[in-house]
Length: 321
Image (cartoon, rainbow, N blue to C red; front, top):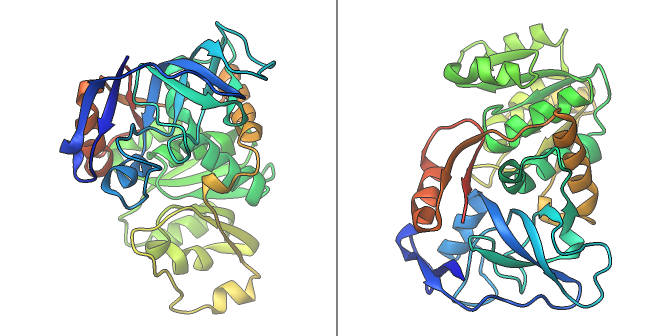
């Protein structure tokens, strides 16, 4: 089979396509013919060596969707021909999904309903599971609550807008002006330009004085802001930052309002199948769609990893072997 491989850590140019032996599934594993593999910033961290793969050479790719072509010993819940999707490979003994075939553990794989698109599902894993964990599991977002999603046009952001809308929350988000109509169509009640000088006032006005839940992907930029726009007993869920030193200029608003801050990583999910099933249901019912901004073939994987860090786009980038 053909697979993207890196023999050494470095920039995108270390990625190349090689002919390698097709793997066989071990106990509790599936061999999946990959239809699509989402491109995530975390893929670039493995390539650079910030996150060290199990061994080199290495095939990147955390997300996957495709069709089961072989099952390993002890697998009863899946059969050859099943459509499946999942996430969380490439950071264990399993190689990643930028390949024509990949072995995937059944504990991070679920069946894909017929109403869900394989390419969208291949891009869904990291972003939709992160959004689900943040809003449903950690924040316990309730109907009619105000939810602020920073960066509603991004991968996690555009999934979070739709999941919050599916919960019947009142959704506020920020985005570049060129994406406002698109993000509103995904379910946001209010889309604000994140560069506006009166953003805090705009959020407070749109939320009747404060938001109940915040999903923040830029804690170093918005840590204080989140407290300032929070309602009483608000929950802030932090999923990332550009600089690992977020902090308060003034913690009084957070203390006065009993604001709870929760930091999370998708890779800590106790059972990935739980949010994956929830996301699959929303994709089947049409309440969640993953916007695919661009697809790349295996030979273009280096371009995909450059673009995921440097380009502005709505939704996700996807490798389609």
